[in-house]
Length: 265
Image 1 (spheres, rainbow, N blue to C red):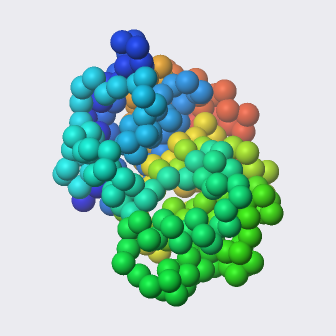
Image 2: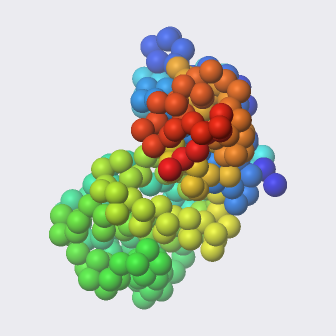
């Protein structure tokens, strides 16, 4: 079943095209990854799907259908109802996910209030359960300010907040860039486990080909605002057809060629 369908999406910045005929589908329960160099249009695509494009950028043509509804036609008020409940985000800058001087629990509570009719105690239980799901000491984190937590804890808390209302689509935009390698593995494993448990879809933005290979079902390769190739991870990793995809794979520091096959170490 197709959850999200992006069709011939074009975006301009001050009348200059920056996204050109972007076209892909994400199925229910699928981990779909966009890879490409910085500035290739990955994050702009994610922002367009989430209704978070900067004011200077506009969608000039195309559609973004979420459950068969073209969300480019929604008002800001309608999109706010969708965002956080049906479509959630985990950002690269985990600190921007939280207001610095408001406790984590208070911010989670406000998000639940915006979308659910629950009592104060029910909201607290839901937030604590979400924090436990990402392997955090729930009570302590709930009563902590963001500046009292480490980077890895904050990013896990942001995943907890993004997933606690059981969204159908999680957009994760370079969520591990600012984390060390051990914390990165931990965060990605948590995301993968929660995806499996909730059967949600993930749109994953990364420049790390190792992450794309390990977790993706499908990979789209972006270059200069266009998707130049889409395929299963096996096709993209072992039988790429586009010259740019081959260039990316060959340029990755952990990739070498053996017997004319691409092998990740």
